[in-house]
Image (cartoon, rainbow, N blue to C red; front, side, top):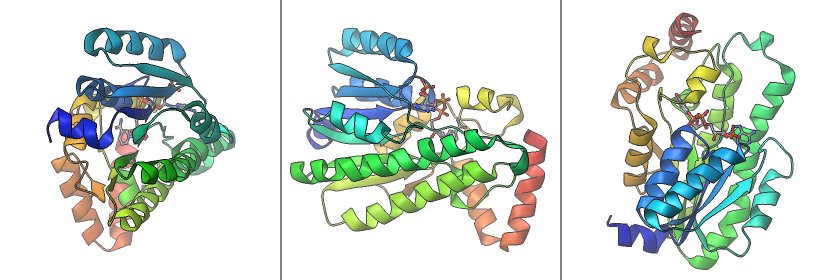
Length: 263
Ligand SMILES: NC(=O)c1ccc[n+]([C@@H]2O[C@H](COP(=O)([O-])OP(=O)(O)OC[C@H]3O[C@@H](n4cnc5c(N)ncnc54)[C@H](OP(=O)(O)O)[C@@H]3O)[C@@H](O)[C@H]2O)c1
């Protein structure tokens, strides 16, 4: 798709949550390079300000900053209200975080926040933006999920469950909107070299086939029409296809053994 075609379908404005680092920042950079105006959402507003200045200078696009903690009950409503006057054609629900380790040793408050950030806010954002996309008659929604959402993952149990929710949400919406000109893509990255790995205490050097966030974002935008689910890494696609073809108990035991080495 040319930049002009992309802009016509998904512009003039795209919204990216989790734009202060990693995959979300890469999405923002690529969309600005395609000439789309942006709404950038995250908590670390100083990072969003710096990114906005750079993208405005480099690409001449307009960037609106929306500081929001997506673990809050009202986060989606806050974003919908703050963007009510903007013609947003692409919503990238990308913000998220994970917790690795034994399930019972996880902090209950953190697990509850993860459910809000990874599931509740993306669900309510899609619910709020869908009538606006329908009124335009075109556009798209991307959910950043994870390969862990394709099955389940011991020692990343709650995170994988949140991504399983997102996979189901994205696929259901894809099915509802398949006859309309609104694309829904559920992105399932494998290991990606972002701050998320550091935050979870994972050494990227111990992982196979780690992709860069730029690569993940670029491939995803190129495959936006190839839903319902998109796995950018050939390595992780083959691995999870194999796991899904195994008896489920065997697959979970294999994943448990693998995760114990990582954490
Ligand atoms: N890296 C991987 O290996 C990998 C693999 C599969 C899927 N993913 C998924 O990819 C997405 C992006 O993660 P990443 O790898 O790019 O990690 P990252 O660099 O840590 O970025 C996470 C982003 O989410 C935002 N965020 C987290 N909690 C938030 C909250 N409570 N409110 C608002 N924003 C919040 C962060 O912004 P602030 O901290 O500034 O708020 C940040 O911009 C996530 O959904 C993650 O689950 C990552």
